[in-house]
Amino acid sequence: MGLMISQELRALIRLSRFREYTVQAALLGLFAVRLAGGSWDGKVLAVLIANQVGLLYVYMLNDVEDAPDDALDPSKRVRNPIASGELSRMQGYSACSIAATLAVVLYAALGPTSFALGTAMLVIATIGTTRTFRLKGRFIIDVLWHGFVIGTAQFLIAFLSFSAAPNLAFWPSLVAVILFSMYIELWQEVRDLDIDYRAGLRTSAFVLGRRRVQQIASFIILTVCSLLLWALIARGIPVWFLGVWGIIYGSPYVYRILTLHPKSLLELVKGSHNRTVLVTAIGLIVWFAIDV
Image 1 (cartoon, helix red, strand yellow):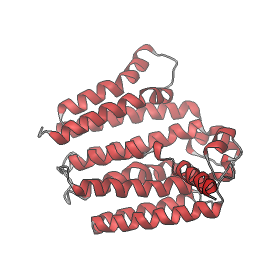
Image 2 (cartoon, one colour):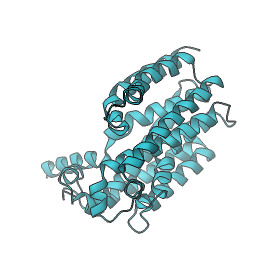
Image 3 (cartoon, one colour):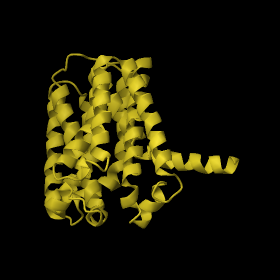
Image 4 (cartoon, helix red, strand yellow):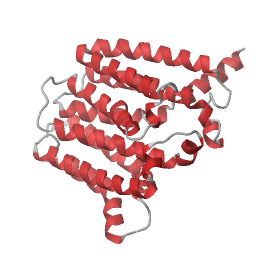
């Protein structure tokens, strides 16, 4: 009995896919809080936890609904405990219900604005993920869906929990978050092209094609950099923070453009991910610790 519970618990932990969003969501939340002029206190922790639980629901529901498709791919079947048969769909839905309920309670504790945004995010995530609607598998709608559910909602909840009046740096930062989230979705769709094709999904990457997606991705990266520069000019982001982050994250892209290296921009993201997260984390810690 104890062994069975232990196996189910490990399967539930895998279903959460916490490694894919925990650190990134925390860094995004801290960035939004600092951009709003907030300082470290208990409310910051409450915002971070609420966003984490909301994303926990989104990722678990995604794997529950995608289980039939993931079963077609050996690597995804191993990763997804629903597809592998370690957990039943009913157990998955039960875990999702608990996460959604807890998220709503946490959003409500942050105030009416956070409650409205958080609840909207959960509803849109549900509509987009369930197989009845499957918005995330439709051309254009998929990237718009991801843009709001993964990134934008968390940014808005964190910022508006500390400032009811958006400053000049808020708008370029918000658009940068939306575009970058859409960029990540395109990269993931390119990675899953074969699986989505077999599942009958007409994603944006499938319709546009790999080459055109890479061109769009290049444009998005350049636009995001321009928007962050705008936020810098608006004095919402310290010069040193944006400068260090830009050098660490942007250097592979500059090299790609200047040398016409065949390695695609989409592949470069994976190689620079860990160091980007590390530098961003250190920068945010310093930003909270000192008054720049």
